[in-house]
Length: 348
Image 1 (cartoon, rainbow, N blue to C red):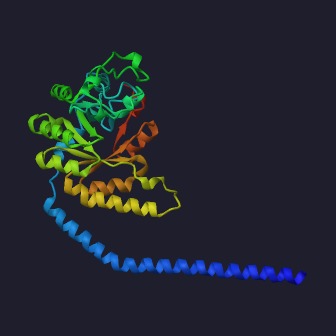
Image 2: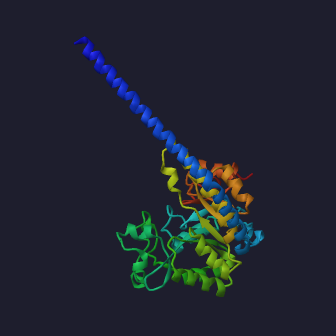
Image 3: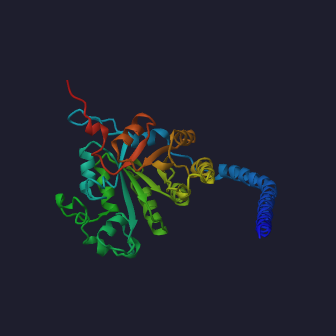
């Protein structure tokens, strides 16, 4: 009985050994096969990248002059109390935490606090009317239909202040149209970053026509979207238009940290955007999520002539870091947490 048990244990160990050996052999053969494919494919891939880099030189669009971009990002005039304009923050939707998003009240509140850089959302209705609205405003009102499937008659009676947490502090307000925004910019020094989340041919045609016929468009508006092809089409017709590329948070960042492939893929995608896509379409700005941003990424983008902007920064400590350490513009939902407004220097 004792010897039978020892025999069974030895047999199990023998079978386990051969099973592990078979697994190791399979892994080695798989790696060997991948190496063979790589040795054949890498030279062709390098040749393809080389041809793409050469071809991009012939279709490359020239970026707007650097002084034009700087004039839109920095305002040196002082207020009546001698305070400087806020340089670092770009207020998302006019300050979605402080006022109804994408509203005239939010824009006026930003201007009152000496912030002249505002990001607004551009959308289009089913009947081809361009409006300043984000889908989150509709979701707060329990409207589940996409903006593109709603007629403008619906928005004509839609109160954007009603469902905001601070809506009772503001007057009822209708949805701002693209035409009214252009008229507003004629009498204001504000720089508007116009973010188009959903791109279609009708919206591109409206923006293209406005950029061609409205002189104030290229001086007060920075067109932003996540589609390089849309930016390329616009800048082909309007070379003086300043554009920003919105980089969505990469799906690779949700992978576990121990998977080093996520870092490799992020590096490859970032290199393609920086060295091929951005120079070809001629963007001047790029919006990067704060979880994918660091000083090295900032330097790499600046080396290709593109200024990075980080989103979304709401903590005072984070704002201090981007102001004093990386010296980078950032997108914020509220001006209440601005270090310059919280810690005002005492006058002598």
